[in-house]
Length: 70
Length: 415
Image (spheres, rainbow over the protein chains, first blue to last red):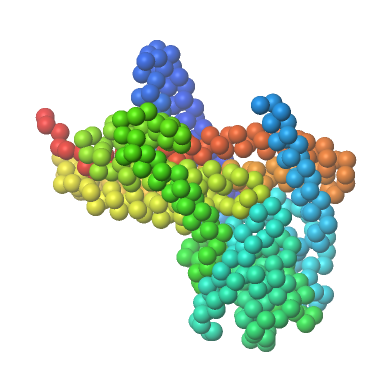
């Protein structure tokens, strides 16, 4: 059973998304620690931003999958 | 509390053991075989095959023409259309559903293989109801591509069977085949069930706000109200400004429909549905959002898309407008993919964790039992995470929809 090079592409996309979401989460925690009363706004924006970053990674994963299917 | 948890784990252990027993008794289905197909060969699969967790996971998250509750399969209505033979309408019970969703009979050249209807294209195959000797899936090369082909066995001969037509243009291994399946599948039934459940929950709550106006919430009202208020105050009001009331019903329907489907898909051994992990379902949700956003877009929104004020014309023509137009379509595509990928990945990981029993156990009792304990713990952990993901994905879909609508209906800035 051999893998394909698209698996590497998928992995790279996930690394990118991981860095992005990790930074967002870290910064959000930092800002919550600085200003705990703003937790509601920060949480909503954090999830929104994480979702947007995730979207880019998902497009990359789908393109990898499709290029494999061709 | 702890007693319930322990009994839950015991129950889960028992059911997993029951299912792994099932897996051993089952004759190896030829879904992971290699090599070419021999017509006129022995019926059914020949060689012993290695367990393939990926293929198994894909089979378990696929849509089916039967509804499973525990070990029992319930038939669903089939509405099938083939250009060669017209409409065929019957219950999938006519296939005499056997183990693992394989039918024991063919009806009008249709057969049930691994829970989904296939059509035998060979004109030599008799129409009407006939008893089959077996069905199996086989991996083989079709037009230079690795594909899984369903086979049915009749009269000592193997007949290849087409899968239903899909609208993916061959990208996901589908495409237009010899028949179209308009059946009420497992996913459709689940959607109707969830819609009925939501109606059953929300109509009394809505009525209670009229009857008990001004009084404290009671019963299920107190469960729904905080979630409702959360979406209203954290999603609708901040993103939509003073027009929030107009879009609130849509956002609420979206949130509770997705949440309901996500949670319903989490129930083990009941339906095993994966509705929000179906690309077609999330695509329809995304298209509704796309239409709503662009139909309610105002002059200001469209001017920002096509002719952003305050930017040099050359930059607008070369970069900004093309990117903005792409963005119009990328937004719903990411909505569609995000929900689909998150839910599908969760379901697949769960199946693969249960598959560890077969990977490490290799059919022997002791290693299987040891792997079962590990896989049960991992599965419980995954289910807890998936519970969180079910809420987060419903919330994210709603909040992104709200932000897109908000961006489309925002009034011009006064500089």
